[in-house]
Image 1 (cartoon, rainbow, N blue to C red):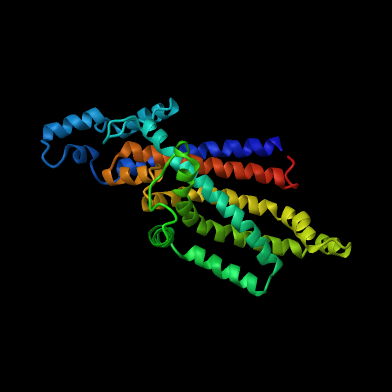
Image 2: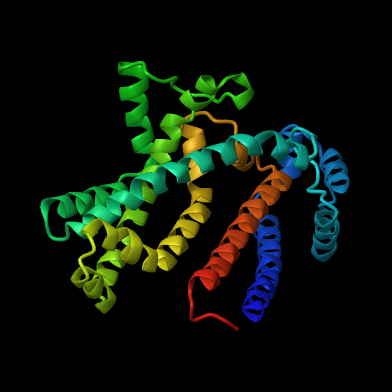
Length: 313
């Protein structure tokens, strides 16, 4: 088992290094001059040259990379080209809303998808199963921003149950906090409910055809007991895997959702940085998202090793 863990952890190191190099090169080699954007159209050539020098853009690309990478190793993500604030401070101010949105979203997705997938497997071929499959196709097909705008129209504008947009921290009160997270979290959870429910259904149906399931039924165990004590437990490995993948996939979803619901999180920070061509902020946020993605997949691999009895080396 320790060998498996060691191999997985070591395999993550070159992946992270590759991500660091790709993020740096893609942004540095993309068209556009951040110095020209900051200085404005009326800046003289001397002013642009001075600004490029102060930003380090005149240095060789390799030197720029090692200076940036050395700062990363010390926890220094650089300074925003637009606001002049440390990027680490900007991320620290924005990471809270993103973490809460992601947490509430995945809790809703798992809480809904697990029982729905099990029920669909239990009622395989019946109207309940067909309804769940049709709903899952709809959840995959409709973009999150359309779901978000529909929910704003219905539940915020027409019914007035929730605020239209914005975010309040937990310190502002539980109702103020959750009332502003319900709509974005539910909207963002739709594709993950569809994905997890389909995987749960498929794997439970597969397990339900095994010999030990027929043995449990022959011994007189109830159908509920067969599902909870045998089928769901033995289908846990791929289910845990897809839940982990869903958490990693949330990274892309928060950018759109935070923009629709005006949530001041990392996704919104990323969008603002892209529009302003704030390279240091873009680099830091992409690198953070990529690192989270790699570590979540690493955690899923390690959990797979714990759940799968075949892995004992």
